[in-house]
Image (cartoon, rainbow, N blue to C red):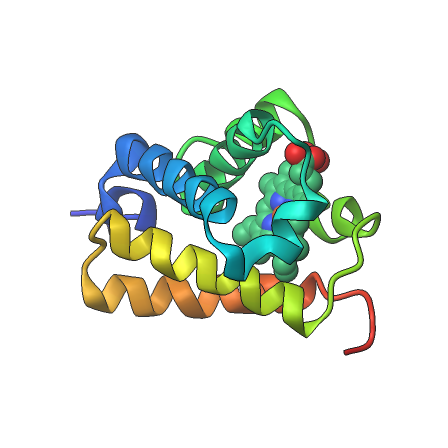
Length: 128
Ligand code: HEM
């Protein structure tokens, strides 16, 4: 049996889609996330779709972002937004709650949380 990807382990396309729906739903509704919400466009649909395409490949599934948009160059694409520890922590907390909403099993959730934290931390581009 080949080793399963994180994409397969969490439940494939439907779980990744649900995760992105919850992530942006929570961002829109939760006052605690208002700093990062304000950085996004009024309509969150395209942000949600881009995150879905990116995470699909990042988790080892179909590389939709590369196929449909190109090289993610994630840090570079975040440079227009001022991201420090507050913004990073809001993003990670929002993703933590989104993962709880789609009931990803505990061990996987911890592993993903670490990976999300590291990626979010790499996005920091301002002091503080
Ligand atoms: C560190 C805190 C972060 C903040 C404040 C943040 C904020 C943003 C904002 C404001 C956008 C633009 C939305 C749009 O154009 O619709 C964006 C785009 C995006 N973000 Fe983040 N983000 C963060 C971390 C992350 C992380 C950790 C990931 C992936 C694991 C991620 C994945 C993406 C993707 C794929 C896009 C779309 C890029 C594009 O095609 O333009 N972001 N982010």
